[in-house]
Amino acid sequence: MSLIKHKKSLSLMLTYQCTAECTDCGTGSSPRVKEQIPLEDAIKFINEARERDFGVVVFTGGEATLRWKDLLRGISHATSIGLPSRLVTNAHWATSLDVARGRIAALQRAGLKELNYSTGDEHARFIPIERVINASQVALEFGYRLSIMVESRQIRTVTRDTVMSLLAERGMADHPMLSIVESPWMPLDPHRVESYREGTSPDADHVHLRKGCDSVLSTYTVQGDGRIGACCGLGMRYLSELNVGDLGTTLQACIEKSEKDILKLLVRFIGPMRILDWAGRKNPQIQWEGMYGHHCQACIRIYRDPAVAEVLKAHYIELLPELKDALYLENRYVEAVTTQHVAAAQKIVHEM
Image (cartoon, rainbow, N blue to C red; front, side):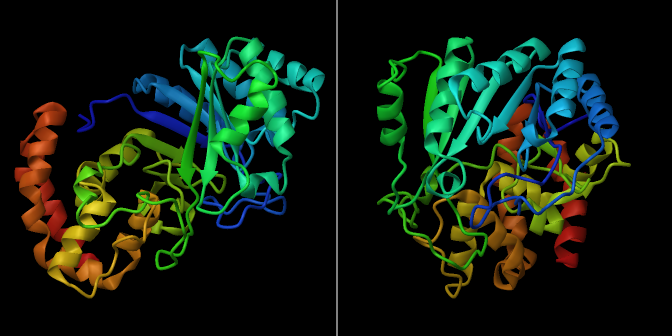
């Protein structure tokens, strides 16, 4: 029995290789990184995801389209067994509208249900923004629900408004199937502070507005090197604690292992920002206010800062009542924290 009652997602990084080499890439991808997983393993996990009633399989990377034939085979297989699929891509392939139409037609024939594009100042150093616009126009022509993620920093050139303006020139800005969102571009170093627009990085007065992480324990990611992570995980490649299996492991085993980890449960239901706030109240030397625009960077801090670990070891039990309440609201399975998870928590924090 899984504690998380929401539909889970399987994320497949067919390769770590990418056509871009963004600074602080959350997966450590670049043109030089060649690691990839075999198609037969991807198919195996797609099959189990269907058996376990996962809601979607997401093909990501790296840049999944660099494994073009295997990508189409994976999408086709997921479609054939009734599992919807999504592609996350930087749209490097959309060199013209005609080329984009050929690619998206092939994806649609394979059964792809949803497209997500990534852009911003980092991506645009390697993939011209015009290619993202070409790919966006064609995706909407083909009837796709499209989401575009734009990197956010205080000083930048490519913004949501930039993308909207370019799409408006093609009559697409108000398309009902289009969503453009901005997401903070984060450093992988948990002590490096990026500059964002005001209000992006919370302080103690506003941290209560931050929620838990919806990704951890809901998304299971088969990475380009074969490790399986328990979240969609920016920085997951560098945090061994977030990796719970490999190509020889079943998804069910990964789920069971992950849901016995009290810290992952706290990250999901309380959230990295609020955990840091709580730890900082216990130890004022733990400075965090205004440092984190993205909760994944705050999560890296939790796992990497010995001072935070010491607070968790000494006081984690204080967080269990809130965790129990959250689990009750999730699925009324309160015993998970009052019995087996308390025992697992004691073991976990002892080993931190």
